Every structure is written in structure tokens, then in C-alpha cells.
Length: 139
Image 1: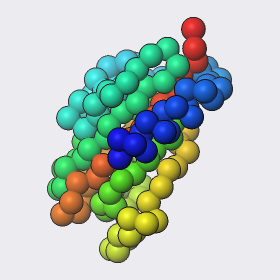
Image 2: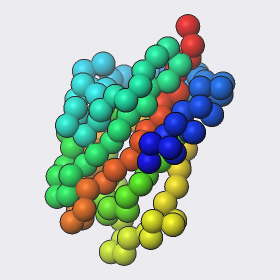
Image 3: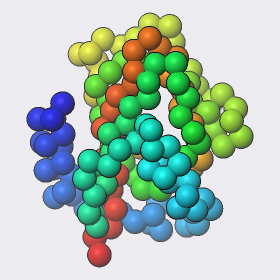
Image 4: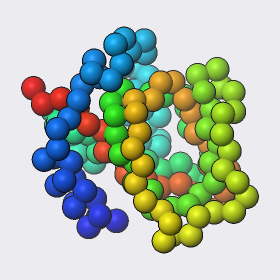
């Protein structure tokens, strides 16, 4: 996982990044709902500068994280195949993983747009683990 993170961070740091204003004209949620502030048990900052924020995301088996946001576009790299439920701003279930898990060979990276208020619940016997690389504009 550390080798993957190091390689990926090197690629990302050389990439063009966008600002929140580039991706969403108005961001209605305050900084208190940012993932690191609102859901610190499941979001830990591994690296942050003016271009990128790298988060370790861990949702323990059977737990639901508090509602939070991600204001920047990002890449999510999963290293576990835990089943999840995804809830929207109204705490309504939007998505649930099917009964079967992806094998480790099928895990990979996903492009994510900025995410408004949401929460994720791990409905598996194993924790969900991922690295989320959020792209910010350099100052």
C-alpha cells in the first residue's frame, strides 16, 4: 500500500489540479463538515500542501461514519473490498454493495468529483480501507 501511495502521489503532484470554484460554482457546506473535521475517526491526513491532500480512509466493520463532505475532486484507491452503504445529505440510502465482494485483483482507483454531504456505512465483517488523493489548486 505504501509503495502504491508513493507512486501515485508522485504522479498526482505533477498533475494539473483544479479548485473548488472550477468544479462547483457555490459550495454550500462550511469547513466544519469537511471530512477531516466532521469524520475524524474515518479520515486521517497523511499529507497536505497547497496542491494536494492525501487521506487515509478507514471505516470499521459495522460502523457508519458521520455525515461529511469532500470539497475537491479526488482519486480514491481502495485496498479492501468491504461492502458499503452510501447515504445522501438527507440520510437516505442511495447505494448498497451487492452480497459478493470484488476479489483483490479487481480493486483499483476511481475518479471522484467533489462530494456534498454524505455518509458511508461499512456493512461487512472487514473494514473498508482506501487512500483518497484530493486535488487542490496551487497558490
